[in-house]
Each structure stands twice: as C-alpha cells, then as structure tokens.
Image 1 (tube, rainbow, N blue to C red):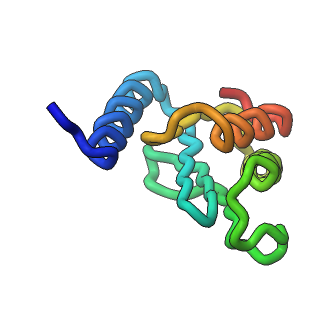
Image 2: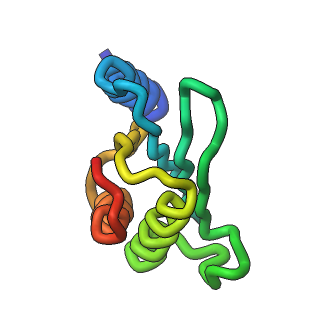
Length: 119
C-alpha cells in the first residue's frame, strides 16, 4: 500500500487534531503551519472561533521575512508567547498539525514554553 507523502501528512494531521480536540477542555489551541519559505503560528479559541494572537516570519517588524530555519522558529515562538500574555492566555495546547515534533517545530515549542506558555 503506497501512500503519498501528502496522504500520510493529512492522516497524521487529523489523528493529532482529533486526539487534541478530545482533551482540549476549553483551552486555546496553538496551531503551527510550516511552508518551505515561512513558518507561522496562531493562538485560536475554538469555542468562540477567533484568533487571539498570531506570529509569522512574514511580519516585517520581526525581520525574518522569507526565513524558515530553527533560529527563525525560535524567535516566532518567543513572539507568540509574548503576544499570548498580552491576550491573557497562559495555558493552551500545542497543535503541531501533521508536522513531526522535531527541528523547527520543536524549537518553536521550546521558545514558547520559555516565554511563559504552558502546554
């Protein structure tokens, strides 16, 4: 049974999302998206359906436009932790999507934890 990379990614994303949804308990979701050129993260309140805070390498004030490396991911993690504090969120759960918890995703999560977010 030959699954394509995209099919495996989508299966993994749905498996992760469904497990997290079962244990969400009203907390905000820290959702990560990684492309070949950029990385972005959003803090989402699924109950109300609103984005509470967001950070991306596409923002010019962060000075990371077009960068998608471990250092950029760490800076984005620190930025989202700071913005989450301003939004009044301290506890959330980490939705890595279909991405493996390794490299850039792990660096982003570690920086967000160091910034004060608990997940």
